[in-house]
Length: 295
Image 1 (cartoon, rainbow, N blue to C red):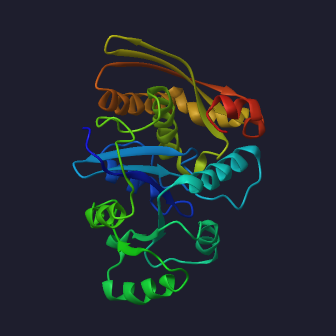
Image 2 (image 1 turned 60 degrees about the vertical axis):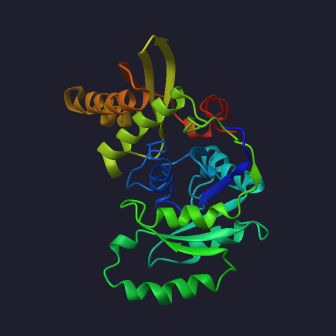
Image 3 (image 1 turned 90 degrees about the vertical axis):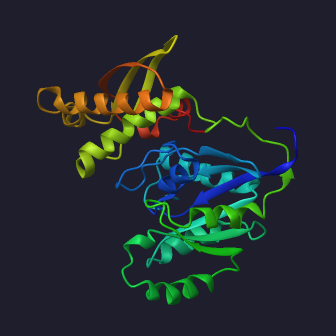
């Protein structure tokens, strides 16, 4: 496609657990960013790309801005949020319907005044009395001159087309920023590690400490077969036993479910081997964080 179309970058920002990753996946149509009910699941800036005949949207999913912890991991995540805001064309400020407090205001204060910001009120499917949304929207809209206000349900896919249309008018008219068939800027290696981490969060829930990550130690491609060797890195020996589970059942299930997701996304067979290793204080290890993609 050589014609000039609307194309630009859209940051998706908000406090932890408002549904930013679910929204990204819904807009792109593939699971690019991992999702769980546990807050602070997203740790990296992740781009999801949607190309339509009249526009190319490059969504940047960001970690929820961290205020509770100050280790190297969280400092890197906060840098990721603020750096993302510098060069984008539009911001989606995502709220949970009916919920707006000091933490949301703190994120709102970070947004550049000159960048068009669309208020995205998510999880509207959970509000039984829809008339209660009107005073809520008015209260939030008084905090900033938003370019548009769009209530959505990312989980149900409601009004996401309205959101795309609201964003399109602010995108510059340029050539394509990415190839038409690209869905993300992240490598298969990165996506593999994220799928494993998602299963850990989903299966272990509140039992799993925040100090866990996944390191891909080897990623080999043989035709349509991928051989992936991954280490789950935990902070303590007791965490290792928790991840492995009785008779190794938890780790086996993590690997099995992650492998199935990878095969769907990569459209090919995956051989996946996963083990657990202890590295005390990994979340403050600058060298390891850099190797895992944190800047």
